[in-house]
Image (cartoon, rainbow, N blue to C red; front, top):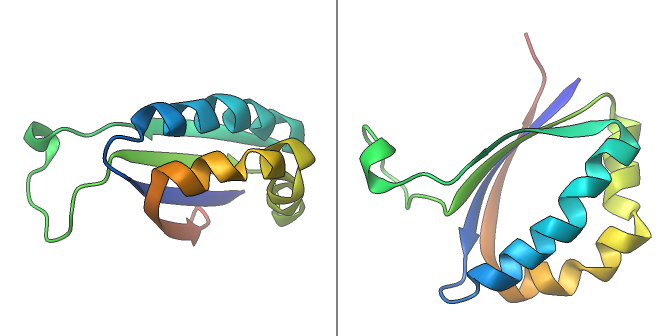
Length: 100
């Protein structure tokens, strides 16, 4: 399994566009043997300590293998929605790993 953790930072006032993007692309994960394990929208009260800006959302996604991840990234439906991501997402911190 391949695990991706994303710290997602949204442009202020573009939450609706981000939700539209998510609603279109997250259902595609299963097609490539991927799944959304966690989708967290943290609040200030959920942080014990932090030295970086708190993200708008945190996603933990898993794919069965690298091929599934690559196919998901190249999916034509997903690619046709990337303008929504570009409009709404300020930045993403991506952490890639595997279970040990």
